[in-house]
Length: 425
Image (cartoon, rainbow, N blue to C red):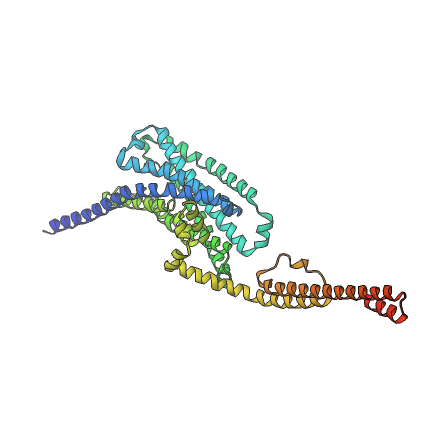
């Protein structure tokens, strides 16, 4: 009787494991094509936005455009091959040539390496922009950014060659049964995911603490870009962490005794981890849109969605209305000391100009706060010019009248001559 109960419990446990496997299998099958269909066009749009004139002046836009292109290649390459191998052309990677298996491993490692280290460089650039803004603006430009991208691509192309050679020697692409592949793969995973994640986390936390006071004091385009890139960094850590745990869990259990239940759990866990990891290659466009108003406006401009750029849409949408209110308040707090200082300077300069009758060419490009004093100065200047012209005309008339009298009298008396000189003076 106890044996039957034990067998029944084992069967129920097996059924629960099997149910978990089928759920993860269905998630992998239906979620990945959706991610591919959404990710490729949105990343193409992101790449266009970062290469536009308004965004490309920042060196970090070079990294963002390259990141979008890398995500497109990952979604179109290894992610699509995994999905086709899983359900559509079942086992075509496994049953195909060894070259196809090694090629799948190679492009997955290259794309993941470029993605990870680009996000690390983005985090480093944001940290330096916040902590040492003058240094990064003077000594870092778009040309140097392209050089960094080229170095990352070259290293990513060369680093996985050893693992690819090992993968090409494994029959039927049964890579998890190769101890050499597991060891080299674990080293690769450490340098592709674990080490960049640790560095990105440290830099992002430091940047957030340094940026916190700046966000309270003012709102500028650079701050929006920093918030956007920090969100990308944290999303990378969040979406790749399950895959890292899954890989080392599979590596630790591959040397033990083969257990059917454990294998079912491992396969199901791997499907879920891959699906969550693929979110990292898909959702960046939506993170950009949620965290950067500048990026969102550029996207609407490209799509010719004038309604979404209108004031009416901004007022109807609660999120945009609150964001706009926050920006206006921050801008007012930032400009109030400057307005007071500029007002004092304008008043002093205006009084000095009126008193000394000097030129006001320095006001040819007035600050918005100086428009009213400048108009007053112009009006005052015009009044003085009119008064002077009127006085000159009166003097001319007096002189003409005196000359007429002199011509009529035949001579000029001393008193008239002195009066003429006085008026001419």
